[in-house]
Length: 483
Image (cartoon, rainbow, N blue to C red):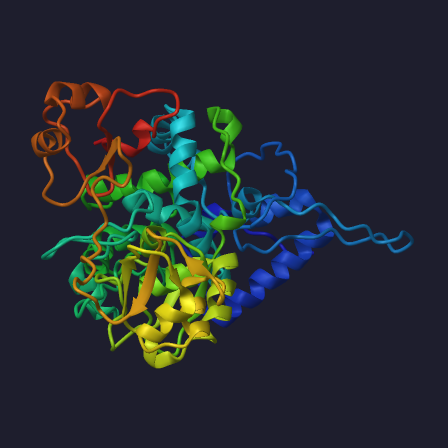
């Protein structure tokens, strides 16, 4: 029987080449299939004591992680095993010590889960992007903990910025992003593009793991920079124990960064321990990439896919002006149902018409074919662009999309500081005073509602309440970060 090496011994080993890692993961997964649920927990490479976990009922969609299936008995009729829940699949990919890593992880787990319903709500809001990142992590065979890294960085909010400040769900700095090949400028910011930035961030984490041979140090390098970590380590091996690694002379924030990642993973590993009920995704949370052969106006894409244009732009914040730059990229991230509707509708509108559309409001009733003729279109094209019937008579007040820019261009998209009416998402340059002023609240109330002091340090991505909290509000988890 193949000897399974504890995770505490694996963490500081140099990872084998990618192909070999993939082969080993495949072999390990096959072995776990034969041995059943106990082996699945061992294969997750965690040194934490095993906790009883009930098998949850199937849910759609999944987190994109491989599902282990028990081998049928040779003499019995094969019976399909119940599908693992999305969160159980993620737990099975956890590879670090998580809850048992250090006292800091225990402390931060309790802090994150201080408001269990609020913590669950913050994860629910993150689900669409979290599900997408989980699929990419699974494809690379990386530890599941890194699915939670954008939650630590930004609460999965694609925060915009100016100057040399970090941006996006991964909070990538401009220089880091450009060196990694992301384009910034010309109406497009690759750091805000969830597809492009996720690929870049996971490439960086993989590269750091290849260099240092330890996923914990990969996280620290992501936060502090690989050159700083390499200089501190020198020719020494990466310390195997948490206590030894904690003495590495990086900023305290970098050590806390790793502890926060493991703390959130600890809660996901055993939510009942923290009285947390994790949100289950629904079909609308599962996103897929729609590749396009040419630039497409986002208002047109929203109308043809049956989506609210604001929601479509939230899912595709890399495009800053409501339309795609001629230099690309040409793609959209959409829920699966809407992606199929868009793909079907695009075939009925010629590509030269895709780029620019504007909206008008009819003052009088108008047959669609008459309106189409007045604007140099055929009725089927205008009907497809507006997702209406070709023989419709449009009532006064109907909003209709027409080709061309119109009188005004859409305003640039920025991740709003007030994504929710009663929540402020901290951006670079914010202060407690400016947030209170812009939110029309007293500074004393802002501090009290968020358990802050006048000296509290804010960081981009934190969520601050702008009204008194209630049981249905967003968690103080997403408020100020503990220092």
